[in-house]
Amino acid sequence: MRYPELGLVGAFLTGVSGGTEREFRSWLEIAEQGLARVDDGATTAAGTTSLRAGVSLLHSAFGYRNVSLAAAAAARTARAQSESAGVFRVVALANLAFLLYVSGDLARARSALSEAMRDPQAQRRPYGFITALTTAALIALDEGDAAKGQHTAERAVEYSMTAGLAENQVSGLAYVALGRALLAAGRLESARTQVGHGLELLRGGLVPAWHAYALLWAAPIAQASGDLPAALALVDEAESLLASFEDAGALTGLLHDVQRRLSLGRRRRRRGVEWSQPRSPTPSSRSFVCCAALNRCARSRLNCRSRSTRSRPTRQRSTASSPSPPVTKPSLAPSSWISSERLARY
Image (tube, rainbow, N blue to C red; front, side):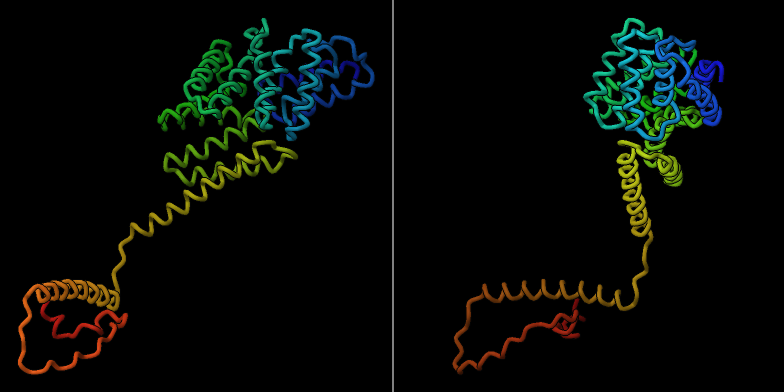
């Protein structure tokens, strides 16, 4: 290919606009074919410091299915863009922050976010700025700060509307973050609406990790809304998507956690149905219950009589007292130790 830079531009535009993965891979292949022939220090048409840096950015931002490799590529790209003050510095740092977040490395994710947000050009880089705000909101929610998470997610959504990206895949995860915050505030229906909207945007995007994350939060929200079949379908979709990953990072643990919660919910629901259905007692169980109740009543009356007898003064008899009959322990059969004559009194 004589102009590999066109492949770089085409792949980036396809990724940002939410084209198909096949289109993205076709453009990226054109850019990769020129890596051996282009001066690595030359600035390309896409604005990156080099063709190699641009390809690395694309590998770490779109279509990846290995979180560890994508995070390593993102770190290299962020370093190169920072050293040269490249126009993709904010995007590279924000993307790195999300990959570190989904890898479970929150400390480094916060550091990358701080650098991205402090960049003087941050708000002039919509794709990077929205990603940075969204990741910051997710971290706040994970740490239990729902108010901060909601404020940051709302800021991301509002900015996306101002930038004309409200219906772009880059805003999808911002809606998911907002839905999580609304769920924490007890606004279940609003939470489901926001997460559902974000999920629809991400289904047509080129970032499978974002898509999987949205599915794994849509499922428990559907379960909380009482729609267990929808929740199960969503988690099955997430499992199928993550099966295509070589390394899904912390998303694998999130999947297992959601599956466990759904399994518990399903068992509780089954037990609830069983308990809610009245059972007609069999004749033997009815007789057992009646006998047990009568036994309790008889024992109560006998105890009362026994106490009454002990409280009365004993009379002296002229004749010798007869020996007391041997005491026998009652058996466990319900009515064997109380005569039918006594039972008939109660």
